[in-house]
Length: 381
Ligand code: SOE
Image (cartoon, rainbow, N blue to C red):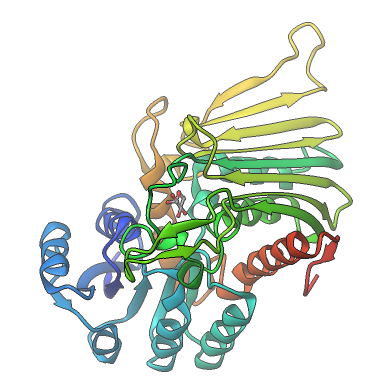
């Protein structure tokens, strides 16, 4: 296939900037796509940082002002890897300039910001997607296929947790590079927008929409030094959040996330229980899918641990040989592959801004419920 170059301008050179750059570099080697990503320009505020980043990943040029990058005629797509408080402004400008937009999760700090972003991309008719990468871990995609094939039957329960432990020390400052996730003005919320957003996105993809929620949140460390002001300031984010949910299909959900679960670095697990079968998945063992089917012979019935590496399993025919597994970074490669495949056919790849907004609306209902101590209906459901 003759591949057309697709020029990427990436804004933000942190953890996600690296994950996405790696995906753009690899995707053409493993997937036969109509478009070939070209690492055209990387953008960050500090010239020395962005130059080092660009040299490392092979970007052709650098910018230190994202508006200049958006003005460039040689850029087809803008990838937003910057902190959450900048997503809206960058997306609005990129849409007005007619660029495709790939935005890091969560879409925005609030549903209101998300709504502006949807209006902008839909008005400009530009392709758009949000990086909810865990959908494209092959084992998670396989879970989706099994559920859609009706193997579980009627669904009763969905439960998810996302546990970390990196903010326990009260000496840890908030704000600035690497620590903006602790600054409410920048992040919008704490674990709800950062971690539960992943759980909610996967949950609704697998099990349909959420109608209502009741939640509790806690901020364990109430004040931290702010790295940008140098002053001790109140902490506005939720350090931990747990909520109950009612799905539209009648099933019940429980969700928990914290950055105070000593011993857990990124324990994202979900389980779904149906009338006939159950599925569970664990990010720490991400290439496996656990499956229990009550219809199996009663003497050999039990939880199966499916090693998701066979060629007929999602995405796996593109990689090595059966039995050899892949990891976290491949979920980003898959997202680029799906996006470019769809773009080549003039179609959308999920989740679009509009689809990712459903997660914003659940997050918003969760935070509202925690504040009001009431059940809250999810807007738009
Ligand atoms: C936070 O530590 C974080 O990096 C999230 O921001 C990511 O979205 C998640 O995938 C891993 O944890």
